[in-house]
Image 1 (cartoon, rainbow, N blue to C red):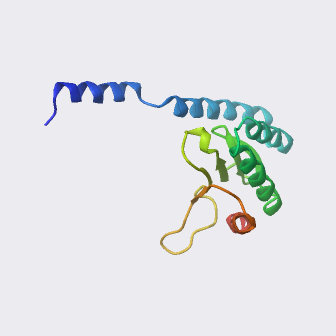
Image 2: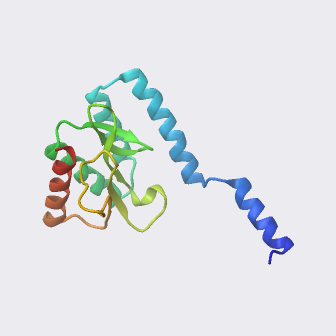
Length: 154
C-alpha cells in the first residue's frame, strides 16, 4: 500500500538518480576515455595518471594503492597502467581492464577493493571471487594478489 508521502520519496529518489560520487566517477571515466583516445597506448601517460590518482587519495587508501600498483606491475609487466573511473587499473593489449583498485574513499565505504574484470582468466568451476576487500596488506595478501594477477593474464 503506497501513501502520498511514499510516492514523493520514490519520485525524489528517481529524479535525483545517481549519487554525487557516482556522477563524479562517470565524469572521470568520460575524461579518461578522451585522454586514452589522444594518447593511445602510452605506458608513460598511464603510469602518470595512476600515480596522480593514487597521490590524490587519503590514507590509508594512498598506501594501499601505491603497494597494489607495485605488486601488479611486478607480477604482470605486460599490463598497461591506466585510470578507470578515476581509480588505478591495468589493461591487456586490447585495452580491456583486467584488474583495478578502488579506494574506500571513492564511494565512502569501509574498505578498499581490488578486483578483476571478466577478461581476467580466473574462471574456476562454477563460482570464483572477482573482487576482494582490502583493509591491510601483509606479505600473505601481497603474495595472493601477485598470484591472482599472474593467473589473470596467463
